[in-house]
Structure formats: structure tokens, C-alpha cells
Amino acid sequence: MPSNRWGGVTYEYRGARIEVEAKGHLSRLVMPGHPFDGSWHGRWGGWLRIIDSWIDSQTLPAPYKLPAERGAQRQAEPPLRPPSWILS
Image (tube, rainbow, N blue to C red; front, side, top):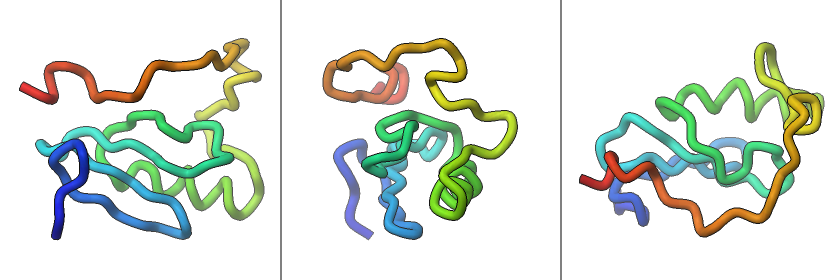
């Protein structure tokens, strides 16, 4: 399986991409329109329930909250990179 820009594998699930970093400990969701698009999470399987819930009902499963519900304002972010300790 070819590697992605983080040195790991990429999975596709219900139209979303899950990019896993080289060590396999963190994964990133690529799903335009999803509130967690571009966010990092633990193991790739943790994204499946979040993706299913969003596609099926446009909601997030408990205990996840939409950024507006957390009181956070999404701001422009620099290009996404995994934490520096992953790359070492």
C-alpha cells in the first residue's frame, strides 16, 4: 500500500479519507464539510463512528461536540502537520 504524506497508510470510508501517520498512533480525517475535517485523532478506527453519525444524521456521537457548542471559533489554521514528536 503506498504511503501518504505522513509516511503511513490512507483509508477511505464512506467518502472520507483517514490518513494515518507512519507510527500508526494518530490519524487525520479528510472530509470536507465535516466539523473535524483536518483534525487529528487516535487510532484510525476511532473515526468510523464519527463519520457514520455525520453522514447518517449530520450530528456527532456523544461525547463529541460541534465547535460552536464548545464555544470555540474556528480560525484559519496553518498547513496541518502532525505533532513534532511523530515525525522524529
